[in-house]
Image 1 (spheres, rainbow, N blue to C red):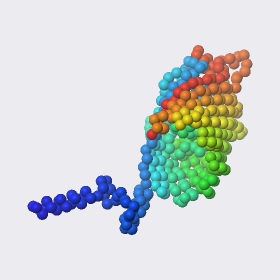
Image 2 (image 1 turned 45 degrees about the vertical axis):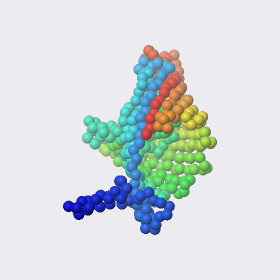
Image 3 (image 1 turned 120 degrees about the horizontal axis):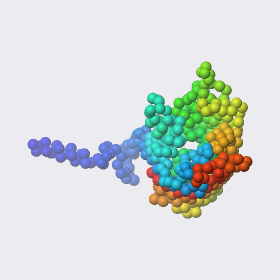
Image 4 (image 1 turned 180 degrees about the horizontal axis):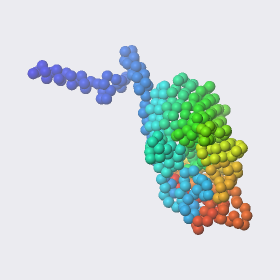
Length: 413
């Protein structure tokens, strides 16, 4: 019995000799390390690199917006889609809840980016029909789901559902300086499903090419595939330039199952320059063309164009507060995109947005007061007084412009 107790005591002492949660692994090393200990250290680090790391992040955002037109419907949309996401006025509204999971190692990454709430429904609208039809919509929560295979230090292959490469702004509120989104964002692609490859020629130049299904849709409505590309150039320190392109046939097949001749094209320039530690300037310009049907919604028989440009100017006044301005002109006079007037005709708009940004709680909490003015082309004629762009307090569309003042609350983790 004494021998048995002695044996147990020895085993227990041996167990205590190893650090907790790291049986036989790396310990707190000393400067004077033996060669054999160094080999164990190197092997363990290599094993950790192969195992990779897992991260979990996300954000929630909510807002309150007051509309100076006091629209009877409490909507900021106007006649047709004047806002992308912040559509409600005169009430506290939930924007989006994001949960993002990522696993990474030295050869690959996988990203599962799930979103919930009103803005998730708007941003992922093309995922509403799941594999079993309209009664199932779990796919609506998928904002992104893709993997990267890093074949070499220069070549990366990506497959799955991923956010679009086109444009200056993104769906995620913490990433953009302005809370409300531009008309260029609202009238461009949101996401794609397909495969793309990126090759870095150097730290200053890279090229992406890919094939995707139709735009903003889980299910492809025809057998055609879209071509996407992005050329990245870093001409100087702090200056990034992206030249983006997409060409896709979005037409639904005819009665014989043939896909008609059609195209949806966007050429997009996005650039930003960190002029000083406190000053950032940016530019987004896009030119689009559409011919034929667009996912069953119809379209012009001859190619019609649309486009616009937005300038950005952000200044950091301190570590806590910064302020930024965005001016944008968007022209959809051809009527091929969703931004239309009350009569369903093409129109154009000038927009000015002023946004403050308070960064609190060690960078986790963002509070953004924002003023925005949208001035649309007025519909002329004495009989058109109630065919303007925006609604008044009586429910009549008598306003050609809209001013809003709001406050957004964003918490990221």
